[in-house]
Length: 200
Image 1 (tube, one colour):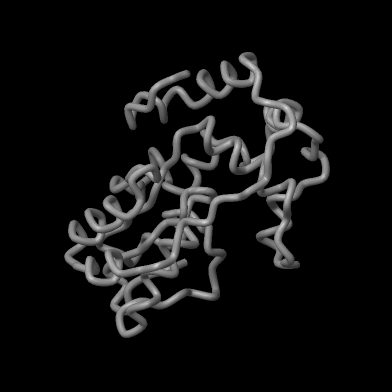
Image 2 (image 1 turned 135 degrees about the horizontal axis):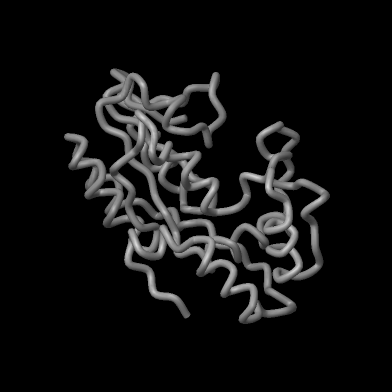
């Protein structure tokens, strides 16, 4: 969890939406920002939003999100943390993205379903629901907008950073087929409609 030291602003990190880049930007101003080591970095709004006047986070086009998630599980980082283990459930492992998404679809328990994670991270429909969700696709510009809405201007850091959003170089050996895309379109209908993402 990343929050302002007075806990007036909280950044809600939905996985695979540029959160590491955002966190690195925020922590360049250490006099204002801190990480709560007592909470997983991907904790939901209900955990990290109680004491914050302003909460924000990012969302990503669902087909792109699942593609990034698959690449991530295919090239796992060297980490033994319990949170990372959550992303590498062996029952979901697959050699191609279509089987991987199908495995996620079949397992009702998993929060790796995007629509389920979206509702979990941002506490959709709950008391502490996050209403300030921006698109990953314009990350730097939208981070600037998000922070200004929260009363903070960090443009001098955002504009001058040389860091790039981490994008995996892993190449899909088998492209996503139409039936997989159709499942994503239908299951993530709320996200497509709310954030005006195009299908196909």
